[in-house]
Amino acid sequence: MATRALLAELTTAFTAATGRPVQIESVGGVDAAKRVAAGEAFDLVILASDAIDRLIAAGHLAPGRIDLVRSAVAVAVPEGQPVPALTDEAALRAAVLAAPTIGYSTGPSGVALQALFARWGLSDELARRTVQAPPGVPVASLVAQGQVALGFQQLSEMLNVPGITLAGTLPADVAIVTTFSAGLPAGGLPRVQGLLDHLNSTAAAEVKRRHGMDPA
Image (cartoon, rainbow, N blue to C red):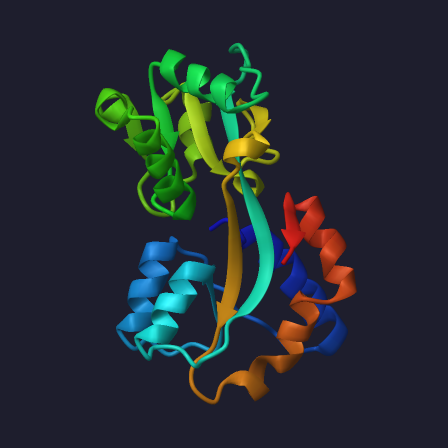
């Protein structure tokens, strides 16, 4: 879901340049990985790099992942609420402890966030205050609706969402950055080589940055 808007723009440009249509179905990463493992037919799957690696190791994808973007996790609060200053790890920890409710996703950002809470020794204390967004539901929507006071998700999914205020990405000393990569079925490279070249082209780099990501 983090790459949904980015891929929509890049594939539209690819189709305009080549005349080759591209159909994308954006779903939660957990669901996408399960569908690939179950043998569903596809030409290309884009997931967090560790999920791609697991699918390759299990024989569900051909060897050799193609890294596309690096995506940082950001923090948001409901519009009109005080915005925490995320200057360093201590400031982030204080903001988390002060928040009555905390939202996170089922994707890699949520897994990494839970690991951070565990490192802080706060897993038990925060358990009753955390809300995990259902697969495919943006954390930003929970923030906008006032269901959570502090939301964590990929920056790309927080941009231009009404009803929220971005506090920024996580401080450098505890940054959570996910690499999103492409994986292919066996023998599938020739069919999608042109699209992959476009997704990692120089022109695509500017589009990636505009969507809150960096080229991988």
